[in-house]
Length: 174
Ligand code: S3P
Image (cartoon, rainbow, N blue to C red; front, side, top):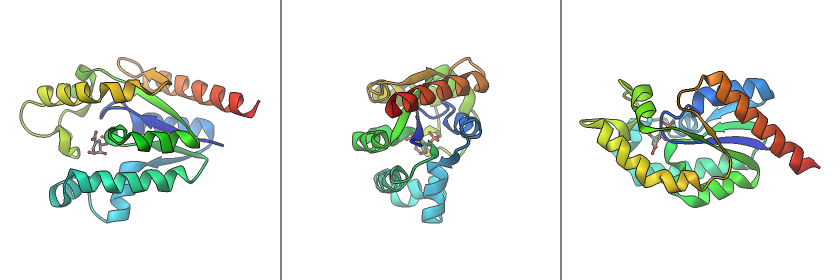
């Protein structure tokens, strides 16, 4: 089966929805950020602090290629995967890519107090999140398949994602 690839801003629910959909579809769940940490033997904040964002994006691109070469996976990507458009093309080649839509208020509510996201730290998180989301919005919106994540239960979002995935798989095999 094709991979199911979840894309979306930080706090859009990629990991939670990924786990739920993987159970429902009987596929293996793979969190890209965890894979990166495992590969590098370092946490994401340490990679950003010691090697910088651009080195992180290079590693992220390598992991995209590694996971896209496999199948039967539900992949939760990192929110910045869309910054290199080739990543999305590679993931879409053997997979169904679904964007989880979210608004800035939901992002702020869901990520409050978390310390593992280097791009959402420091003062005035609201301005930061708003600026990042604005910059990335066209990249997320270019993904043709999407599900609203804000203000909905994880189960409802996962249900819609599974329905989209099954419809795409059916279409591909007919
Ligand atoms: C990032 C999102 C994070 C992680 C890194 C950078 C981003 O993943 O990859 O901190 O640029 O949006 P999550 O979306 O899982 O938080």
